[in-house]
Length: 169
Image 1 (cartoon, rainbow, N blue to C red):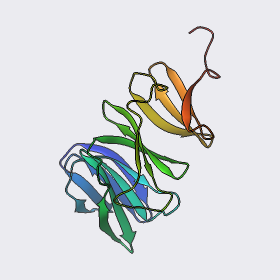
Image 2 (image 1 turned 90 degrees about the vertical axis):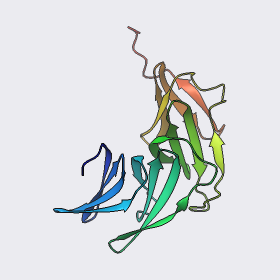
Image 3 (image 1 turned 60 degrees about the vertical axis):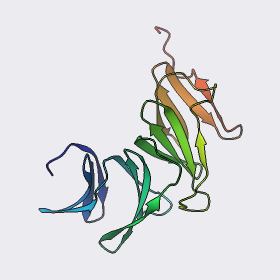
Image 4 (image 1 turned 180 degrees about the vertical axis):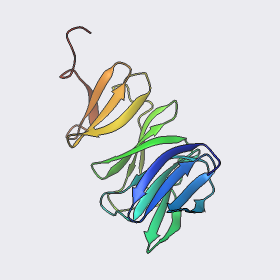
């Protein structure tokens, strides 16, 4: 692969690579390009391990694995941001959007091209710095320059989590 490689995803019998010129399928010494769009990250859905989400330079795409072949299922409509990271929590994909923050895509009904999207750019409860979503001990957190933010699933909002603050800070 002669391009910038951003992310590797290990799959049974193969590895996928997200690169500056697309997604490649690697098997031993064999390399096959399966997507030609610039992409940054790959995420394998836990509820359906044959579905791979691809964070693109201009949106989010779904690939579906059948046998040893990956089929393009579609792109989430109305999502044109650069997706740098994807995590899954509470039947949603949580997306780190380059230079803007956080968005979520509802997967309660499975993959839909016209899925419900929530934009957290204007959410005043979030820090005004870039945030990076992560799952820790079955909880959704945002890592930020000013600490950790934890998602309260009952209130559907984030709060500044001070339980890990060190007295020296």
